[in-house]
Length: 455
Image 1 (cartoon, rainbow, N blue to C red):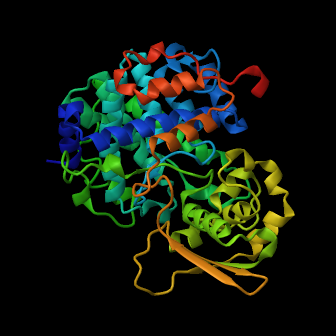
Image 2: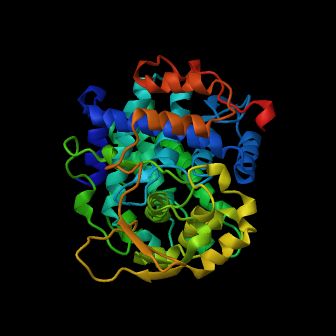
């Protein structure tokens, strides 16, 4: 039996009541965070461009766009928009350890779009989100996150599978149809890393996630109409693992289904930066708070980081805010001079902040030295040398929002209300989402849009 068949069987037989409480809580936090980051992300020019395209090419539908007033589109077009919105400002969730998956954009966004189209309940949405994460996270883990070494943007490849499964649950696909949905999704995956090595064009990074969300909805709908997809799409000849990955472990594709819960590995972001900068930023701010120094007192910053950071995330002279957010040295420099807990502080003016740009140029990056610590792609050893000669350092592989340091209910609420500040009915949305499993219909929720004086 192929992995897609085992995953499909798990998906159609899953019952929400079988999920442990911590899985339910992780899924609900993921939904809440997605609504917040997608609403915040709707305001940016690249999001607006995608929205205009979707609006011009979609018939009237039932699926809302977060942060956008008065538009209800077809589920695929809404998934395209909300997936791109969620990823629009580097604030969407992922898995820890990293596996090239972004569940906010490619599971929650498409699931919400299909749930509104089907007039589904909050409980049905939670079920779809959990199953989508369980499947997509395993596919990402089996890839050993090696596709980006070949130049592919991983969530553009894994995302269609998560979207297809979540959409298929809400559409009521049979086991055979779910296998086909996965097979179709594999042929709709895409995304190249050229934006990391180009002077311009990084808008496409946001599009990759929107397209992945849309692709999964399309795949599930085509499967429901009777279109077949290859059951060998994942580990078979010319399938996902062979075609896209430098290295892989097929045994992880369908291991421990229903006993080991991948959803609890969901990681929420604290800063509007690529995840590889998060441990360094948190370490920096913790050292600044503990030892009471400021940017003017810093003489030198040294960072030991992973090979992935050195190969993909060192952009010393970013041309736009999207490249800046993808660059570890730039994000650390930004966090030295600005409060990183305020996403509004990451703006175009920072690109012209000579203090930030000079600090970015001066940060010394080197690979991890041999030692006893087990490093990941997100780990960092930060060393700060002050002009006084004092040296402080901190090693970290965790940050607030990661599975071992999850946000509590109060912190989650603070983050949601910060992201939706200026939105009409934001508090009402928090109250409803906090009790999502009791919500009878997602269509009953009011518009979550920005008031005129904040636009």
